[in-house]
Length: 401
Image (cartoon, rainbow, N blue to C red):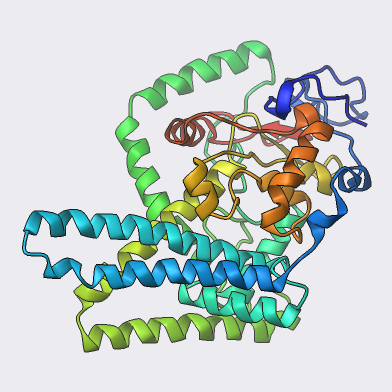
């Protein structure tokens, strides 16, 4: 059982304490980290029962609202090129792209809720709505639902998690280091100096990751587990899937192909430029938000990763960071960023109950609840530069730079 919370609102770093319980033959925990020891029952019991109630009507209302936002923005955009002032046209299109990207991200989150079966009590309704919404956003619904479920079941596990899996020291090509304080300090000084010499390189890779990281993950499993062969969400023989997933993968591919066919048809009827302005650029903004949100949820210097024998579900679920993107974006993104810890603990809990659940979780988890209020741009830069790798050995490992 973890110690009682002693810091207001749970906005804390995790407890750092010396562990006297390192098993014989095991590598000692980095930073003398003491792992949390909650049971899933005591975590669930701290949350009011009504927070787990799902309403299909409420879910469909949110879908209708988001689709209305998207339609209004689309109709407004049809008037942009009719503006006489070219400056207004040049200003209006970026506004449309940004806003439509935000709305599209919210719709993506609702489809994600369907994949978790938290949208309603009906599996048929969940999968129908999720397939339609995700297919429209070029996401293979069932294929990603399957891999995402595995991610939730093994979050923070070094060999079983599905996405944002840290590279090890040897994988990034660094020589072995003796685990002494002097070596660690020397390494941090050296690598910090090297990082500071190339901020433009960091910026370049940030842009590449934010624009293309999401489709790269779907197509070639970028940032996922290394299975030693081509791994993709689009082919049935991918190591992500089992034989029983064959039809689901084909159905997912069919949904994406329908959308691509619709985009090609629209391009032939209008022009490629028109489709790019109305769909492709907002789609890239959706990619940006998805990668930014998920990257910051699972990549932070304070966050541990576990190896087999030390990992369990609740420890892994706590390997996430809650962050606020501001009231407007938190609302439009349906709370996916600032209630992610609750979501990982109980993925079938509807997002509209997650804030209340988080309030109660903070009181129980105390220092083991991670909330980071660092400005988003600063947090992103820090995580990208400081979270390069973890050690090849150790039961509990932290990012190093």
